[in-house]
Image 1 (cartoon, rainbow, N blue to C red):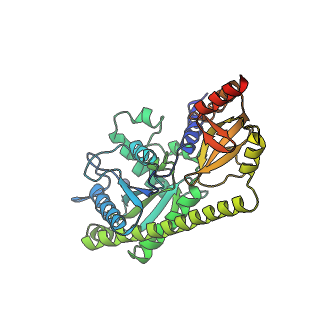
Image 2 (image 1 turned 120 degrees about the horizontal axis):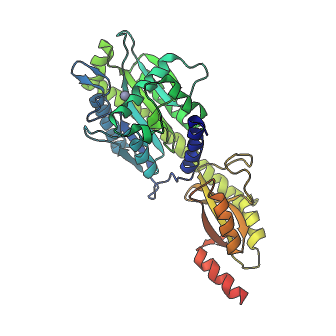
Image 3 (image 1 turned 180 degrees about the vertical axis):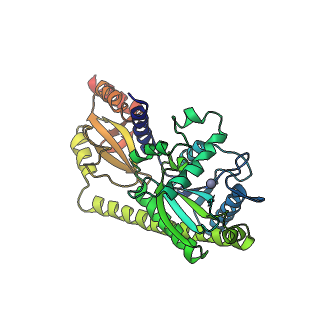
Amino acid sequence: MSKVTRFHVLLLLLSFCCLSLSAVDKDGNFVIVIDPGHGGKDPGAMSGKNTEKSINLNVALKMGQLIERNCRKVKVIYTRKTDVFIELNRRGEIANKANADLFVSIHTNSAKSSSARGAETYLLGVEENRTSANLSVAMEENKAILYESDYQTRYEGYDPKSPESQIIFEFMQNEYQKESLKFAGMVQKQMVSQARRSDRGVHQAGFLVLWKTAMPSILVELGFISNPDDCRYITSQKGVEELATSLYKAFVSYLEDYRKQTAKSVNLTQTASGSSKSTVQDTRQASSGTTSSPVFKIQFLLSKEELKSSDSRIRNLPDVDYYKEGGQYKYTCGNTSDYNEITRLQAEVRKRYKDAFVIAFLNGSKITVREAREIIDRNGR
Ligand SMILES: [Zn+2]
C-alpha cells in the first residue's frame, strides 16, 4: 500500500473506533469541552507583547464561568486552565475520554496584511470551492504540532508545512458534521450580533485539533491579533467579556435545541412502545418469545439517533437490531443461543469494530452473559 492509501485505511479504522464511543455523562450532564488554543512553549500568533495563547485562555475561562454559573446539568471541562503546553491530539483525547457532547476550540487569527479583521468559525472538512485563505488558517493552526517532539508518528506523516498534506481531510466522513455546522452557525451569529465583529463567515478546513473528536466540534477564530483594532478589542476586558458572552449565548441556543430534540425522541419511543411495537420489540419477542432461552448478540455501535437500515455503519452485518439505554441507541448484530456461534461472529465483527462485545437477553431483558450461559447449561441437562 502506498503511504497515502495506508493513511486512509487508518482514518477509516479510527472513525469506526470513534463511533463506538459513548457520549453520555453518567450523571446525565451535558458535557462541553472548552479548548483554549496553544499554551506554554507554543504562544500561537503574536503581536508585540500580546500572545494568542493568553487571549484564547482569557476568553475560554470566562465562557466556562458563564456556563457554570448559569446552566444547570452542564459539566465544563477545559483542556487547559493555565499557561501549559498540550499536544493537539491530546486535546481531542480529553474530550473523547470525558464522553463530551460538544467541543469548542478557541483561537486568534493572524495575517500578513494588517487590514484583515473579523471573526470566523470552522468545522472540520474541505470546502468545495476552498480558498487558500481557509487553507492557510488551518495550516497555521496545525503548525502547533511542530512543538511536539514526535509529531511525525503521532499524526501519521502529516506535514504542517505542506499544502498537499491537507488532502488527508478530503476523505473525512464526520457523522457529527450536521451538528457541528449548526453550532458553528450559532457561534458566528453571536460573534457578529453580540460582539459586533466583522463577519468572515462559517467555513470548513482541516484542523488537526478537531480531527479525532467523537462529538460535534468547532474552532472559532475570535479576531486578528495582526489588526490594530481587533487586537485592542480582543485584549481588552470589555472585548474578552463580550466574546465570552457570545460563545456562551451560542452554547445556550445549542443546548436548548439539544434538550428539545432529546425530549422529542424520548416521547416518540414512549408512544411507539405504547401503541404499535417497535422493530426492536418485535425481534426480541420473536427471538426469545415463550421459549425462555437466552439469546446472545454482539453490541458494536452507539448512536444518539436511530440509523437508517441503509446506513453504511450497520450494513452487511447479520440480524442488526438495537435497544435503547441511557438515551442512546445501542446497535447489535447476531441472534443465537449458541455461545460458540456468537464468539465466532464477534471475531468477524471485531475486524470492523475492535471493541465489539457479547451481550445477552432473556425475554427482551438484558442479563449478564454468565447468567445466560448458566441458564442454557441448565436447560440442556
Ligand atoms: Zn491558534
